Image 1 (cartoon, helix red, strand yellow):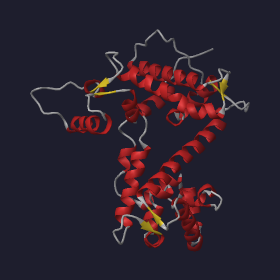
Image 2 (cartoon, helix red, strand yellow; image 1 turned 180 degrees about the horizontal axis):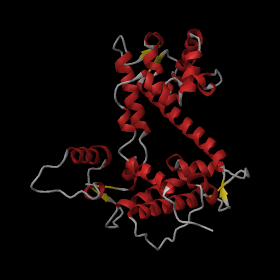
Image 3 (cartoon, helix red, strand yellow; image 1 turned 90 degrees about the horizontal axis):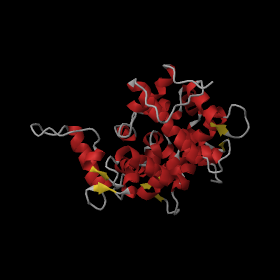
Image 4 (tube, one colour; image 1 turned 30 degrees about the vertical axis):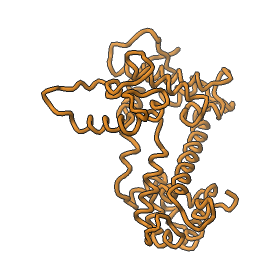
Length: 313
């Protein structure tokens, strides 16, 4: 029997609503806090302990190997572009590794695919099914219904071969549609469905700002000024006052490129001792602790992943 959501099943919704676009990666641009970063981003105390167990000589050896791999043109220096490309590659690698681990956990019967029922059981401890045409009276339950129906639609789109469940590749497309070409159109369609209120195929500034309505008697709050600036200067590339589908994509898809570029610039600003706007191995080793608590090494995690420090990468 298929059941509606229990109160416990609504918990993931509340977390998702609290972590909506605009409340994520950008908050990580503050000062580096080495102890916090190592524990939070290495994955827990156990991995921090493993990091500490490496001898200084082994840390040094693995770090030099990573530096060599970041230096794609082998000229002995790391540029902003090389650092940014490496950080983006690291983001994608760990996202794929996480999806592969999730696939194993979701595949309850170990048949090599994840069904929609298995996804529900892993997420909510039960199989949930909603009538697409019947809104719920309770606001929280209705929000959950909408979210659940969107997940189901994305699941069906990711299922290219239309078989019972998702293969590993299809599961990655479901979890990370921004990384898979055949999901791009779906991502755009979903964004337009949510934000394009007048159905003209574009997102205006008013639609971008959502439910905000300006009070002529008062100045716009700070967050609205920030959002307007993002719309005008970051997303509306052709300055026509609206976001077309490709511009919309740059808004709704996580901007790992921008995050990586900011981190690369931060490292160069902090570690470039001779002001040549690039980093030598000596400069990095001189500031080894900063480099190992940055996204360039995924906060030291890469020193424990042969994919990054092994000579055959």
